[in-house]
Amino acid sequence: MADHAGPSQTGPSQTEPSQALFCIRLVSIDYYMAAPIPGVDVCFSHFEGTPIERVPIVRIFGSTSGGQKACLHLHKAFPYFYVPYHEDLPTSPKEASAFMRKLSRGIDTALQMSNLQTSTETFKEPAPGRRQAVHTLQLVRGRHFYGYHAGEQLFIKIVMYKPTDVSRAAMLLQAGAVMGRKFQSFESHIPFLLQLKIDFNLTGMGFIKLSKVLFRDPVPDLSELFSQTGGGGSRSSQRHVSVGAQLGSGQRHVSVGYEEAAEADGKGRAQLGSANRSSQPSIG
Image (cartoon, rainbow, N blue to C red; front, side, top):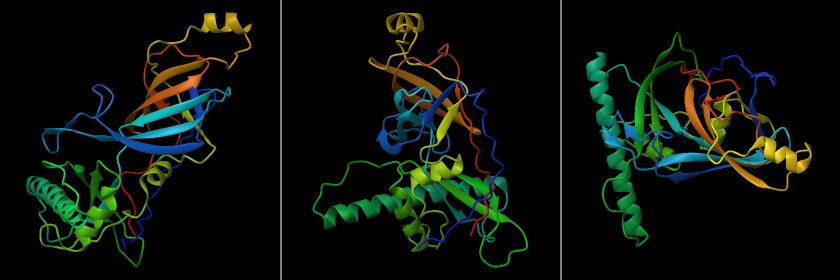
């Protein structure tokens, strides 16, 4: 079982209601895997040098501050976990980069072999070809939460595509099935959706505040809508919008379906008014 990592938090940078152009209350949240959309998702892995096949898309159901029912789709959010970058590993940037590419390929291979074994045991036909598992690997600094540690140390942040691969990859790393050495994993026990909510200070029934929005065509005509409702904003007709979102320092894309039109010009990106998690976690 993976140990718990307690990431250090930056102070909340809440977006003021006056700055929030679009708000949605988080009532229910789930995710699904889909092919990346050009201009919206990450479509090419510069780490692996290959096109990306499938990415996770978070779906949030709720209502806006005006009471409109909404379904928000959040793009460019990926699950991740950490392993220590041991002292005996390469220290030069070039050698460290080569090691992490080798580690990434090792994780992909180990997961592929694990899938083949599972398919054999369950009498299922294995999926053809090599399935992408690792999105990227990054070196970060952090401090162990348990015990005494004089300072921070290096960790590898392993960013995956499929959330269900996180626990399996962590188990294989801990068992020594990758590169013939054992890696202790951290934060691999945290579910993807909970990890996302922790990173950006999202709470159930709380508002996600977006400062810039990009609507999907066709954008509802506000004057038409209000002339039909006498300015009261009736919720009888179903509308759809798409919102480009930026959560903290990482760009995200949001697609929203809702009732009534949001008061926006349909241009720009969206900003999530909640705290971003530090890129230098405290590991425990």
